[in-house]
Length: 341
Image (cartoon, rainbow, N blue to C red; front, side, top):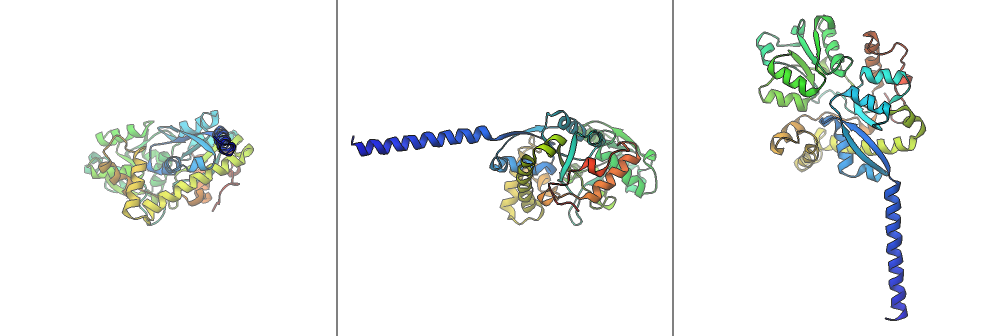
């Protein structure tokens, strides 16, 4: 072997070692992040960013941790078990925000005129008894996860618009979405309101009846938000910006494929297959894809946040003594990261 060949091989070996070392350092430098999620299509921005490598592009090593309801996720954020969460504003989250440990930093799911949103359902039993529109929910049971949940807020808004009080409607806390579905199917509760990928599946299966749309009672409802601990929001802005950049890219892909439908049928199917790994994973894709595709709602572009809706939610929670009177919008929301309106 000539000297020049040996020199070339040595350089190649050195380059390979340097590349391997660089890759190792890059991998070890990735920030480990735990992201709370619920197995709903409304959390698809997280799933897309994870599956398509958008978090990795931002130097984030993300682990998904799943929850059954919003309030436990807020507690997990406060305890440090989860770094970022995506779910509805709840009384629990507001209480933690008042204590200075949790901050809303962006928007996720939003009701939008012209796009099917959350549907008000009743059991077949209640429908047969004459509960055929929301005005007839007075005196009926309405399923919620916990007191102070988004379901609780929706029930109150429906009651108020129809001219009766929340006390006239019997809200029934059942802790988990699965338990509410079972109770609705069996007629143990009369009514519920839920995102279309679940509602339409129940309607199409003949397990419940549609009697209205939440958007008719809460226009421009900021259904879910992105949040983190106050410590992360205030002390690690670079991490927050990188997370929101990846999350927003996932939301843009979702909106293009399933809401605006600019990616054609092929794009719809590809997105449905990705989401199916997390939503209705126990069902055949042929069945699950119908609910996923037909149940898509708008995800906020660039995680922008509807402050008008957040303000309305805060006012209601405080009026119902489900959030501390001392809680302000400034305590609840860090507006440094996304566009607000």
